Image (cartoon, rainbow, N blue to C red):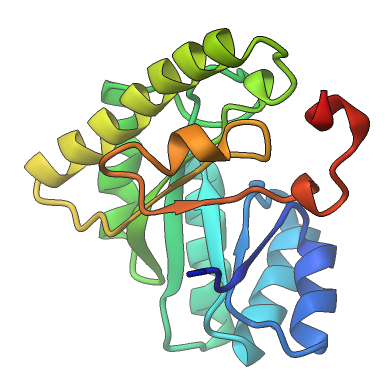
Length: 193
């Protein structure tokens, strides 16, 4: 059905998945702080298919520096995490996002490949029509940002988004390349309802 790779929310989940043979992984939350950055670099030394997200220059530069100091020659695949309405993580759309993307593209050990936007605030919105309408607003922010990056000459191949409650809407949006539904595996009663 086109499913490949895996998304994980935390570095510890990526470590377990890699140890069990799943290495095409996107870590969907930012990794900040020296301890987590070191663990990421240790993991990246063995598993080069890992993809990460960043939402700040400071976080991106810390990872870049740590990879450089480790002696790893490869560049870690990196996406800009964009705030599409959740207001939990992600850089603001517009100029802040563009500046971050340009910074990441200029780093030696990170390779900019795309954007991520998670509309988590909509996952359990019960009204189908309202959830769809609000989701499409978030998707417009995401795909418009990806296109703005491309117009600036940045290589954007991945536009990833979606959760269980919105994946069907996200997958139908032109410009979205992948969706990340995860809790569908458990299909709790709130999603069923």
